[in-house]
Amino acid sequence: MHPAHQRVLDAAARKAVDLEIVEFEEPTHTAEDAARAVGTEVGRIVKSIVFVASTEHGPEPVVCLVSGGNRVEVARLAAVLSLPGLRRATAQEAHELTGFVVGGIPPFGHTRALRVVMDPDIGRSATVWAAAGTPNAVFEVAPATLRILSNATVAPITQPTDPTTAPREA
Image (cartoon, rainbow, N blue to C red):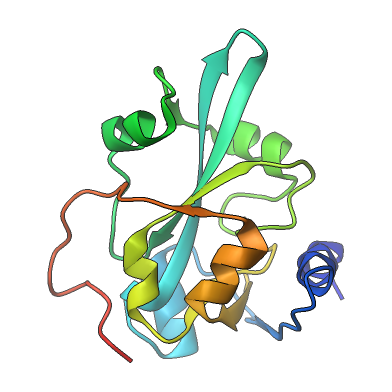
């Protein structure tokens, strides 16, 4: 098993949650790719996007868990977190701050404690799919369990969605 997958499984196990990781032969570079790979709607894919703000104590990272069809509205996220100057992290920053590569960043299991904010649209489905530590692996989980595992705060952080990509009730 890949060490990144094991970190995700271990983090879940510490909260008494068993996950099953599904691996693909090819990486899934977009939420749409991931949705096709698991045979679901894009709204049931959870994107883990890293943002960072410069503070007097150094960089303040935040991981946003976003429904696959949604986009983070940075100004809204900054207001929710009271973090002016928030910006999307570079791929290198995201890797250094989470311990995972972009495209495979899971919602939890990071190398350090991070603030996590979850898009409320994730809760529209009975289960969702999230990255499991590498760009070619995912796991399925109930949104409430995902919130607990990631210690996420649920807040409106996205731009209005296109109704054709919004998650459907399960």
